[in-house]
Image (cartoon, rainbow, N blue to C red; front, side, top):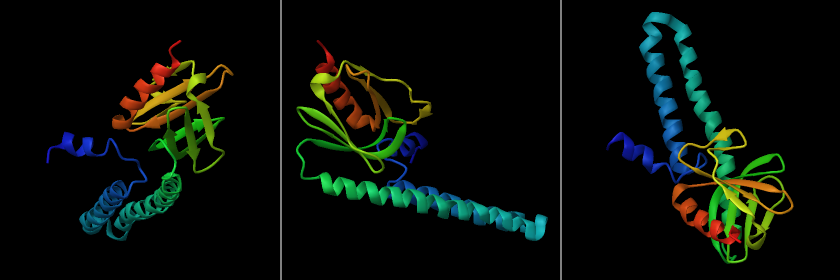
Length: 177
């Protein structure tokens, strides 16, 4: 498998996705064990510090595994709603949180795992912007959307490329006068 195809495989996935967790934890575990074995003859017992990479993988798994569980529970609870669902990262009122976005014909609902849900009526969107970062943070392979409303309220969220193209066109059409 070519490297570009491997990287492209993860563009529509999040850090809390089970496949991404497997790759990251597996890579850190293999690297930690291999480096420990490699440097053990040279460094002696100090080479055991390389096993900290395994610990980093376990911490990564614990944090993003919990986030993934909460996002999957949120998706399951919102399955019955009309509209299209997408996992997302939401930035609103200074809080950035993973969550779920629900787009239907009248409104966009952003439901984070932490904080209050945000509902934006599509008719109230005055502008849709596509900055490279979401309030200072970059999301590699993802598309950032920032919506502006008449109340000078800015709501930002990040979508995978496949969903972002479709939603971006729909939201831009709604914001045109």
